[in-house]
Length: 292
Ligand SMILES: NC(=O)c1ccc[n+]([C@@H]2O[C@H](COP(=O)([O-])OP(=O)(O)OC[C@H]3O[C@@H](n4cnc5c(N)ncnc54)[C@H](OP(=O)(O)O)[C@@H]3O)[C@@H](O)[C@H]2O)c1
Image (tube, rainbow, N blue to C red; front, side):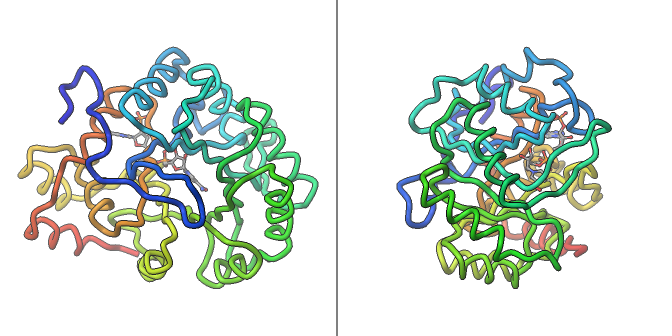
């Protein structure tokens, strides 16, 4: 449990080993996107606090941090390097590629071969690494071709720029097409207590030993609003965010969490979710909250 002045050690929810790899991470991780400025664009609101969040997360045992060069752009990668380099051998940094930011903060998708390669090289340079442990290919929509950019990912894997490949914002059909090109160790898609489009995918991935990393685990830009969630949280004496994260941990053993926060207070709150086991009557209430 958190003593509210520092984060409780992580680990209560166990570990996960990415398939075909030596990489084992705690199921509770951290997503760095919230460390960039408003709208994930520009410098951190409070760079000292941002670095303190990263250091406290790692001190608590977080060994899986999700980032991207398009957060800021470059802001979260710079902060991670400033706060944590030289990295502990146990720390796995996972980045994603497939987009860049224009000068107004727009998100421009690009999965051309040259751009994908340059993106991995830029992540390596900014993070101060020789090889990325895992790189997620960020898709843009259900009609996008997966095979061609996956061939580029595979080529970069063969060259040693990245050790393992993940994929993000994919349909089941796109995931099948990606796995035809190269092994996938992780899928990162939108999923949470109320948004559950991927239920069948999560179960199928669990059978194959592949991790599923939900983005927007707390609702992201639209925080989960639910009277029932609030009632369960009140009954358990926990925050709704802890309950939402605990529900994800109980949903499936292949779910790895990367909740995002820019504050140590929220980090402490989130990490304490590992110590919350939801009793059956509350689980039933929460299970009924799916809206999609
Ligand atoms: N693959 C993709 O396309 C994709 C897309 C989006 C995100 N991601 C990744 O997924 C990670 C998680 O998603 P996310 O950060 O967008 O959304 P999230 O984790 O669902 O929610 C983050 C929001 O919740 C707030 N928050 C966090 N902990 C809280 C707490 N205990 N109490 C109250 N409010 C709390 C944060 O504000 P404060 O900063 O004030 O705590 C922030 O506004 C990101 O950091 C990023 O690494 C990936």
